[in-house]
Image (cartoon, rainbow, N blue to C red; front, top):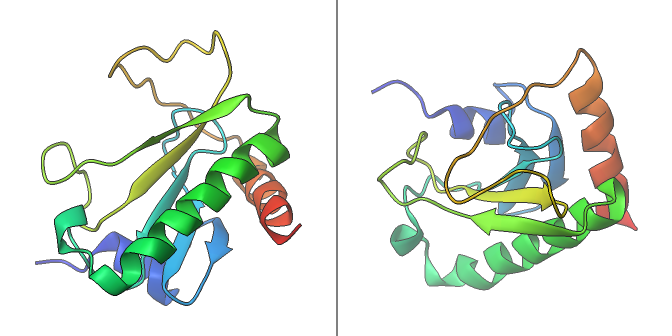
Length: 137
């Protein structure tokens, strides 16, 4: 099996726009975001699904998710967030990851139709910097 792409990001071997860097967790921008500022939160330890997450990491994982949900509002002017996770089915990378997506009323996200977008050159780095600043504040 090829190396897990998220393990590559966690180790620094694979580049990513990191917004949250903690002892046990890393948050980085999704390269195919639902909306700009869409963050993926992963444990540093390779864990495939939520049921596999060790008990000692559960509270920290949720706390990091809360921090990211606040950051997308504060940094990006979102009205709220969409927080979701797949386990095995529809899980594009077999490494636990939680999506934190900025939302605004009328943004067009409906049900499970998830249109993807792209960042212009340099735009992802600017979004990541805004989110890091909100997390540091």
